[in-house]
Length: 135
Image (cartoon, rainbow, N blue to C red; front, top):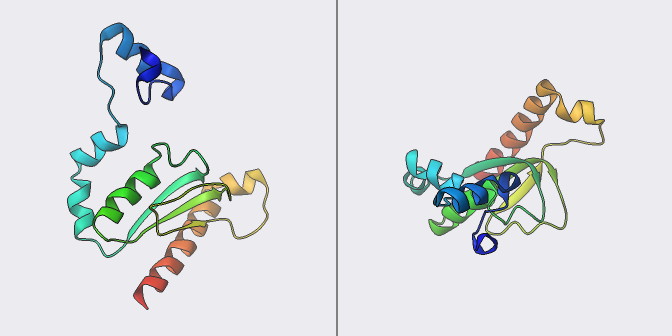
């Protein structure tokens, strides 16, 4: 029954369709990549983990990368901080230590999506996070 398979509706239901037709196995994309790069081992040695997402919202707890990163960091007692283009107030971000928006104020969609502006904003917020951690 495809309705009981976690993640079967992701990516427009492609995974569920393949699992049903080809008897494929559903795996977390995050977990596959984390295992390949030995992410958990790296987190164990870290003082702080920074992660990011375009938007953090109520769906973030349903398998989005920042929350999955936060789970691993929490397991090893390492603070995990997420930065995002937008942070919705209704989101549940546990086990992340904290979340920050990269936006410094009201802006147009064009400005929010501008690569140079986004890079500068990410750099600024990340620097502020690291400064807090170093004090």
